[in-house]
Length: 315
Image 1: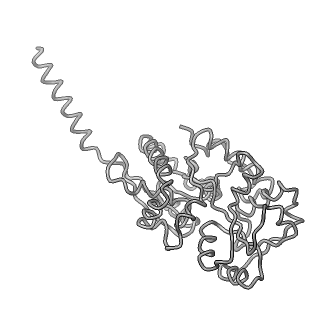
Image 2 (image 1 turned 135 degrees about the horizontal axis):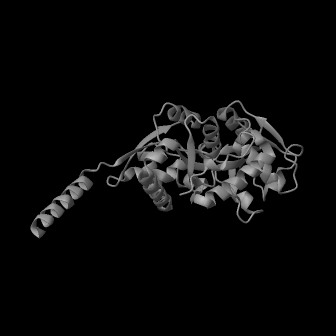
Image 3 (image 1 turned 180 degrees about the vertical axis):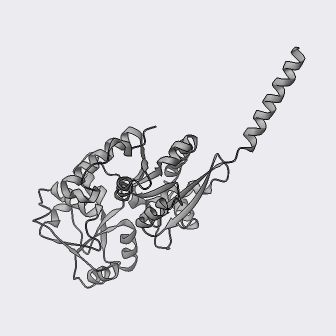
């Protein structure tokens, strides 16, 4: 009898072992925006072994992510937080925010040096897009210097980045507010301009600015169907962000995987994105505070109200 039990036990263990060996990695389809903070995730696409198989798609605009998610062509997206709130509110598909990955990404470009944002009083700031998150953030930042962002500063809009570059080069504009990617491209053409990271400027007034500019979201269906894959993915993302401190290697990998598309996107660009992994209750706390600030300045930038608790993925 004992002999038969031993045989059966060995058979069961063998089947279990073989089943584990034959288990295929989970495909994780990730869409990212090129020339963005997604650069810090380049290391996960180098993984050749593991329980997750990361499939990368890169698009040129955040709005294209919404289309891919709507069409069911991706499971995970690496996008600006305002894009995440838009997808969340439309609930097509339903998504959750898994982690913040960047606390930078916005630059004030100038043709002259300034000591701090107080020198923006009675100045004109040029942008290429209206009602952006970075415009709202700058308005909040200058308010910390007792500047009324609606009365003491003028905001004007250039038709595109080419016109803005020409205006700065011809001294027709002194200040411009751009994403770090656009600021990097501009500085590669105009050596006379300097830039100031908006998060750094906030840190001069606030000990811990509640800024999360870029995040990772996933569809509810993918989260519910693949809890182990989600847990492993977050571990891999956190490790990738830690590895991104080696900026030279990270930039090289990002270009290999088409996350960065031009030579002038370099280590300085990656540093300006300020990669940082923020998840769980800390992420919810920081984003709740961030959205609260943005609501005071321009509620429409986050859809007029804060997302509900079901927006946040808390393991």
